[in-house]
Length: 487
Image (tube, rainbow, N blue to C red; front, side, top):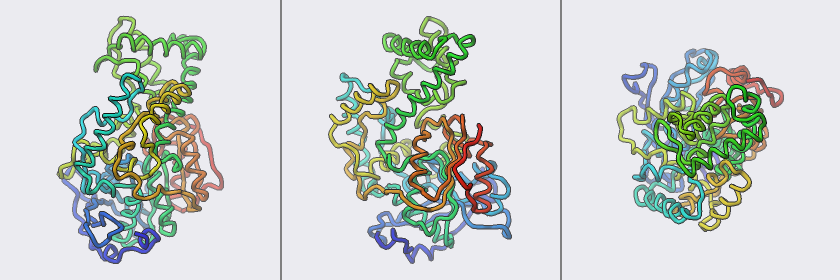
């Protein structure tokens, strides 16, 4: 492991002959797939090996070709095999002619030796409101998830980590015959990319990180960071809705709008509010906190919930923006997830959830092991962040994970060039998280979309950040300084 992590490629991986074939009949002929063999355990490179599914669309110009652009959609657990097809329309011609677009399903995901834990739908829900009366049940659920995963996939679970996926990326680089790789990562993919730059700085070329996570928060800090970001977005929303009281009738001041929302929550906790898909308690409504970044979408929903609570027609199920929900992802990311089993191999129904916990729990040794710590933190965070503090601080399977932290978490701190692009109002990779990534990558530049809403910049379509992204990928030149542009 040490030699490989330090940058010496495994000789057998350099010699891999890739057999490229058309991926399937549903995609263009130019979209090709292959398999790469990688060690399950990089501490034993001569031992068991697993398949990694990769794909490509070749650069459109042999003359202008610069290299390969690996891509990751996020997650963890998001399948990326179809990303070349999904991202191709979003990339300008100058980028497409310079790069082979390379997709891959990370180890344990999709077509890359997928894992599963036989989790129920309830066990795959990872944010639960804190209540003294339900804490014992929540603790039992978290323990059950850990036990199920260990029983079902314990032989591989400890090896499904970000550091090993970064090592896999370097095996892919070697198998492709490339000296360096360029990279596009979204959401969790930004952390994966940053870890690669830390482990393999001399093999990192042009890295674009879309909607970045703070490496210092891996991983419990991420959950709690969502709560802090939600409170900022909620405050902004109350001001926005108050300025439009004539349209929505929620209050003439931010304080009145805030009170109207909390009155709704209290009423829903007494009598769940009917919606098209079923009734919602106050806690269930709070769980949709990520929606507050999209003020024009969430406001009619709150109005409809308020009317339904007063005896009107059932409200819509809710806005699409939701933390951890594929429905809230930009179209290319949703499409990639929907096609996880496109090539026909059996993928467990809970594959993404299983990988989420394998990575979040296995990447670091920092998860508390005492359930009472989670109880105290949930109470404390709810007091500080009323909207979602308990949801972010609640107990998770990582409290009981048997293989947690087989390696230390990666401390990202380097001078590798990278371009971070970030919406100001992102519920999953908050602006504060992206700023943390910027502090960790000293050679990077950051483009912030002022007023930008939602989780994703490049993946969501045209934006004011596109010119900087295109210039960087086509020339390697970063902006002279961090930039802010208008949404």
